[in-house]
Amino acid sequence: MQNGYGSMLAIKLLLTPLLIGMVSLVGRRWGPAISGWFVGLPLTSGPIMLFLALDQGTAFAAHAAQVTLLGLISVASFCLAYSWLSLRVGWLGSLLASWCVFFALTFVLERLSVPLVIAFIGVIVFLAIALKLFPTYHGRSSVIPPPRWEVLLRMVTATAFVLALTAVSGLLGPQLSGLLTPFPIYATILGTFTHHFQGAAAACRLLRGVVLGTFTFAVFFLIVSATIEREGIMIAFGAAILASLLLHGCSLWFLRRYFGTL
Image (cartoon, rainbow, N blue to C red; front, top):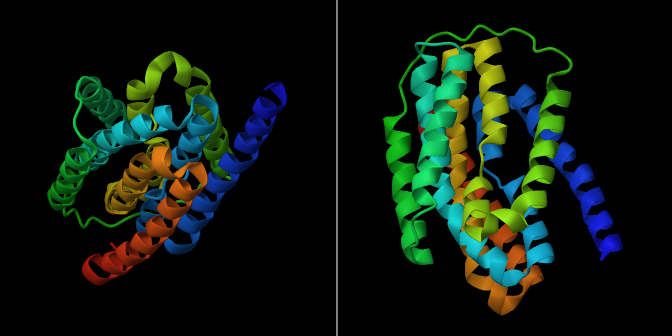
């Protein structure tokens, strides 16, 4: 048991910084919109759910994955709120107010219990509406080179979040663990740094990309929740990963086709 926990801890410490570093490099190479789209992949939440399944069992993970779907409503609301606020206030005010929106909705959703299919349909509809409500701000972005320690800060913060959530998951229970799993740590870090160094227009493009990519996130957790108890961890996560990669490729085409460079 102790050896298994040590192995899982080592995997978390290696995998999470690698993923957040990759997202950072994607953003620097192809811009904030593609960076936001890339964040739509369950880069942190997927490993967390795998660790929950290994630690707490498939029944716990199935329920947490279903609740995680509802948590995507809070994530989209965070992105939408930050985008509108960024047009009028600085990054700190935008962040604090948007976090309040996230936690308020999480508090409400924690008291809901709906079937998996209803949760999925509701989330998809909400994400589609949120995309329509994003501001169409076309202000010019001023590009300021980010500090060299920016990527390191992202990596350390994301790693700390993964470790903290998996450590207390047994105390929180599957409902609250699932709702907090999609906490917008990537959107928080990328959004605030983009807002600070490139302006509100770039931050809006990034966060719109996050919401668009979140459709993939929803499909991933739908498959995990629906199949993990019946088919087992390996098949459930394998099918979820394959479906997510296919859908995410389609969403990239949609991003370029209908939003251009965002």
